Length: 138
Image (cartoon, rainbow, N blue to C red; front, side, top):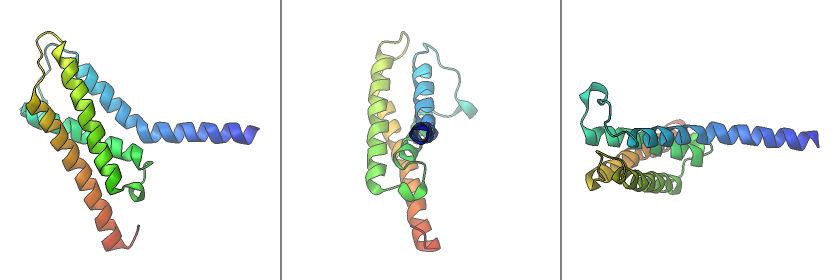
């Protein structure tokens, strides 16, 4: 009985460790989307670049959750799913902004979101493939 409880607690902690970053990034995006006036982007980066960077982080965090926090858990299917989930979150984000005074929903932002997620997860996939070929590790 105690072993079952310990195993469940360990599993909950592992899932929080794997998925927590994705949830935190989604919460941050939601909070920023709720603001009528955004603070300036770091380094004065362009809005599209900021979207791509934020959703690149989200895509990577989603892929981390899907791969159970392990590079060997990264699959091409997981990459596609992470991009899809990040893009769908971008759709909900643009819809949310539609209702925030002073903000608008823009297709260009959604394209930047999807591109950022695709590039970040693609780089992780490339790293995974490189580690198999170069290091002989699956």
